[in-house]
Image (cartoon, rainbow, N blue to C red):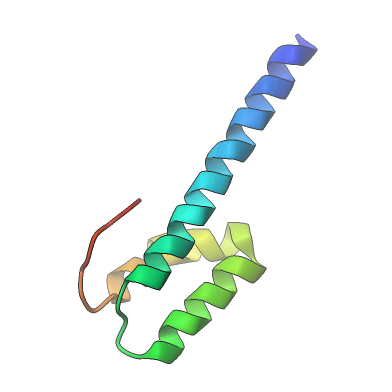
Length: 72
């Protein structure tokens, strides 16, 4: 039972880390209205991984200029 819980917890951590890394890649590759906006999103996602990633996925993706490739 304990091994199953640890496996499940590790699986969730790996999935969240992958989403976090993909969000960072998407921010770097996308074009925003200005460079400051990209820097703010990047700092927010790096310094506050859980909150920053959720906010970017909910708000930041809509503000992109190019509508470029969606990784997530």
